[in-house]
Image 1 (cartoon, helix red, strand yellow):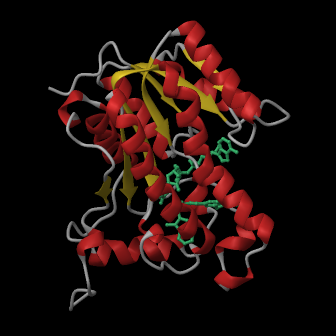
Image 2 (cartoon, helix red, strand yellow; image 1 turned 90 degrees about the horizontal axis):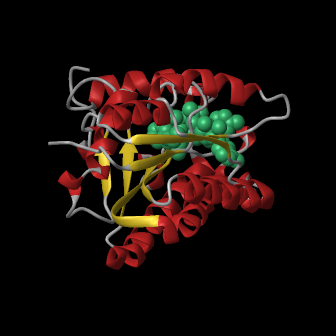
Length: 263
Ligand code: NAD
Ligand code: 0WE
């Protein structure tokens, strides 16, 4: 059975009740995991209040600010994990950022700093969090990150985020090879498009969702809870033989080669 009791799970990337990380945190909690949450802090402390209220039903035993662009905040996060938990079993990486101007128009117009920001927040952060968590990971542990098909194929306007996701997926493989001997597994979930804070800020996301509803074998999109269930599986002992993989949770969209006729 899917059982995460006794496992300590740190979840990054919750911004609101539409976040994929929120779907994951709920399902990890439901499976019995002890939950810790990090959030992106802002000057006014609005995120601390908002995310803090949202996650209260999960009784998080850790609730920490962590801007992944700041090494000191990452190190402070894992110092707190060590102090409070001693060990970690599950790390969820569910965050990404690119400047809005780099998510439309010609791919080739991206600036050096636009490239750097997108790959720093969306890709290097996984490597840096794994690095900080490594000495605290218990055998049987699991790291899960979130990726998107735009890292494998060209999706209009995904642009520099596609490059960041391609690098993220390759990072999953290198991390899996490195952490495997310690019996820590590293996998990614490639989710289909879901309306969240990040995706809703993108022009045309509703059209993309309608396209998926016509083409995907299941004729619908997926929910945050479905992604959460897949994450709970990957983090559980049921997935003890799975590492370095990209698991598509996309209603089957990825397998299709052509739009079905009569749609
Ligand atoms: P979201 O906006 O709810 O989550 C993105 C998170 O990134 C937010 O919580 C935000 O605070 C965090 N973040 C941004 N910059 C940060 C920083 N410097 N430090 C710490 N945190 C930072 O959106 P989401 O759609 O739930 O995105 C979560 C993940 O899922 C991302 O990796 C995204 O690429 C991926 N994904 C999303 C979709 C989709 O359609 N929504 C599909 C596939 C994959
Ligand atoms: O990974 C993502 C979202 C990534 C994202 C979104 C934003 C919007 C607001 C990263 N950074 C920002 N920065 C902002 O200022 N997805 C998989 C969702 C998504 O984003 C797209 C998509 C899809 C799907 C962008 C273009 C085309 C399709």
